Length: 237
Image (cartoon, rainbow, N blue to C red):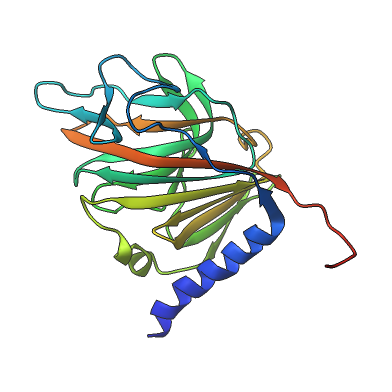
């Protein structure tokens, strides 16, 4: 009973801290629900199906190289983004944030990771460092490059609300050196990255189509809110 209560409690504590620290602007829809306007992807891979950004590989059309659908609207720094996602059980995908483009619709940087069976949902991946934060962890990379880990939840308990082969919601909050992931309203992980060479404070947003066995990935209701730190004040009211 106590374990089940801890995850929501921790989520509320972290959410309250983040809300108090930043002021976010109006919602910006990144996807119009009908076509790929505002996005750039590898020819033949991304399309709109049933109101969702969709990519699919099949035995007849295998995906041999990772490719990303890249949002062309800027390189946000401090922001919140929410996205509904649905991926087949054997799929691997992710949402890139604060990342860099590479040739042939590739990227490099931070990723809110996901797999269709839930195994990597809530993990934070980084192309140059691998899986840098597990579900249920708060990790700090110091200015000296050291990795410090604090447990903030039970990975098995946190993923219980994930719906296999159904729609789930990622919420990603980027503030200063912090990146925090929520899935279906539950805090999954957080990184505070002060690494001297690998930390990034801004960059592109992109959606991943992963190589491997046949899979289908879909995203919809992508909403961005850019944020700025709130100025401290000695007065109230």
